[in-house]
Image 1 (cartoon, rainbow, N blue to C red):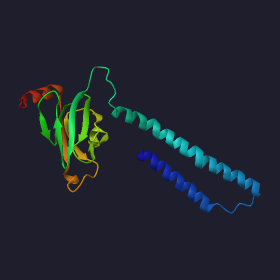
Image 2 (image 1 turned 90 degrees about the horizontal axis):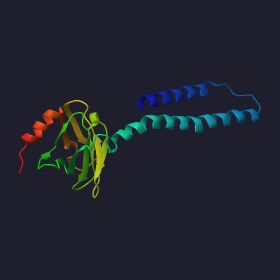
Image 3 (image 1 turned 180 degrees about the vertical axis):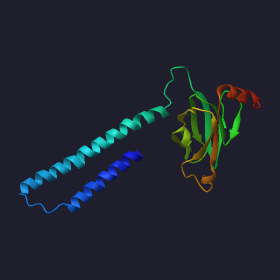
Length: 190
């Protein structure tokens, strides 16, 4: 989108410079109206339509990847995340594991993050894994994430939620699947 915005900006500046340098038109008034109508149709209808279509061609597939659509090979791993002022509570529903400001996931596996909040609106965002979704009071939203390779990824609350908002950070640690299984088994269980 940034590259496309630069192309549009350069085109607009070029047209602006052409309009400034253009000598006064001495043609008949009817001819001028025809030229003006062409500019209105091209710059006011065609250019925005093509621009929106181009952004949709790239944006819809990206948004589609973030949706928690049914998977062909079964279900995604579910992790419940609750935003609090000013920390994240992470629970693994199939166990008694409860963590603060850290999320552990298997790499190469789709994960459904079920987001809720205990107080105000929070924005769950892991930039390198894509997608940002708000946790809204009274609702549970689902965000699908997938780390393609093992590593540690930084997350941040992306909605201003009060005095200590800037410190509302968390980490996502992605393990190879067999190491994730060992991590789950090593956690204290009640």
